[in-house]
Image (cartoon, rainbow, N blue to C red; front, top):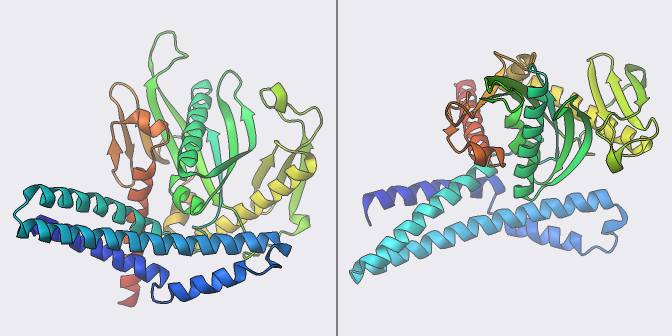
Length: 375
C-alpha cells in the first residue's frame, strides 16, 4: 500500500476512534436494546413530549452506530481490494480502491465534526434572528438575502423551518425576521453564525451603479427543552400586543394579535406575529427563555461570551464574515480565514464548509484550554 494511502487510512482510523468514543460503542448495542424495549411500551405516547424525546435519542444512537459500522466496513473492504489488486498486479482495482478511501476520509472527517457537537445544547432546535443594520434599503435587502440563505441551508439539512415574526423593510427586504429551525444539531451547527455579516456589491437600487457596503446581524439561541429549567419572574417582564406590520396578503393581521415581551432586567425583547395571540404569547415566552439560557451558556464559555459582548451595532468592527460580489467574488470568514469564490453557492445555502471550519477551530481552542487546565 502506498504511503499516501496509508496516511489516509490512519486518519480514517483516528476518526473512527473518536466516533466510537463519543457514543461509547462498547455499550451501544445494550443501550439500543433498552431503547427498543421502551419504544414497545403501549403507554409511551401518553406523554407525547417524552415520547418524542425518546424517539429522537434512539434515532441518534441508531445513526451513530450505523455511521461507525458503515465507515469501518467500507474501509476494511477497500483495504482488502488494494491488497488483492497488488497481489494480482491489477492497477485499476488498486486505483479505484484508493479513490474510494479518499472519499471515505472526507465522509469520516465530516462525521467526526458532527460527533464533536456535544455541547450542552448542541443537539437542540434553535431560534435564528436576522436584523438589518446600517445602510437603509440596502441592508434590508441584505437581511432578506441572509434569511433566504439560512432557509435554503436548513431545507438541505432536512430541518423544519417556522417563521416566528417578520418586519418588512420600507422599500424592500426586511428589517428583521425570527425563525425556529428544528432538527438534530440545529443549534450546534448554527451557533457559529452569530455575528455581523457584511455585503459588498453594486447596488440594484443605485441608478449610478455604485458599490455599496451593507451590514446585517445574525443571532442564534437554542430552544430550551423541558430538561432545562429557566424561571422567569412575571414582575420582570412587560407583555405588549400590537398589530403586525407585515407586507400584507393572506397572513396580514386584522387584530392586535402580535405579541412583544420585554425582559426588563436584561432589556431582551422578543416578538411573535405569525399565529393567534395565545400562540404568539407562548412562542415569545419560549424565545425569551432561550435568550436567557443563551446568556447562561455565554457565561460558561469565554469565547462565545467575548463574541456576544462585542455584538454592538451591525457595522464595522463586529463582523464575522464578508460576502464580496463586486469587484471580485469572494466569501471569507474572518475568524477561520475559510473562503470560497462560489458566492452563488453560499447564498443558496452551501454553508457547511464555513460552519465546519468554525467548529473545528472552537474544538481546537477548547482542547488547548483543557490541556492548559490540566497542566
